Length: 302
Figure (cartoon, one colour):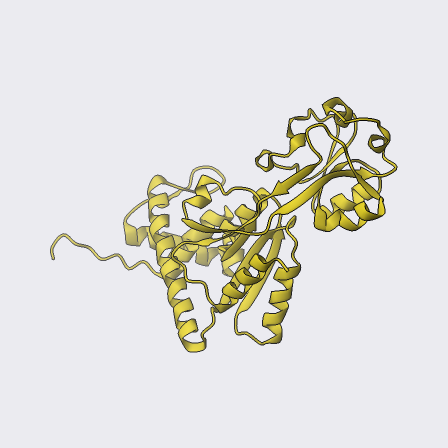
């Protein structure tokens, strides 16, 4: 038909444009693709030639996608998604298993069930390569999008950007937490209920600054001193050392509360909080046997 042109965009070109957007620079994109800088530049130039569009803004010290580049990127990612579905479908038809499974979870969530089922899959020699990584709070959703993970366990509600992927959410067992301090901490020696000023006078221990979406009772306190740590095990150690107070999930502090090493603080806004973790996967993507095993283990919560 006259007037209809053919664009021979290759998967390599699509993957290169996607890598540039995800990693931000040519050097990082080349490292992620395990290609040389020259090969990446050539693939991008060829893509511009194929489309007849200027996809990259070369002004400034860093390449940026133009408006046309963003539009083309959307279609490139659709091509890559179709390729991934084809690879997975062929692998499943040959073996009955998905080729790979990437899981990212919030480190506040108990990981015993998750790690147990991963160990079982390895022991059974399941042909699925399983990769599990822990992040915290907003970092969970960022890793899910960046690494194109298959499953995400998060305690924060997803943002509109990730929700645009049409995610399916499964509620997991509730996660209870206490506001605690070491028994020798000054807050544990106070009589009566503690108010905001009482807590504000001491160090609040958080993980990566916390997040207002957690809706913790202490969220309104004007903090005079805060220690932000990388994970909940470091936070637990800091609280046990008497450095400050903070929220700990029950599975990390139940023994210490029972022994009296840690004590719940009688804060007038409440010393207990319940989180509602959810398991997410992309709508329209059929879960394979390994993913279903993970989902079942997490729902059981054992």
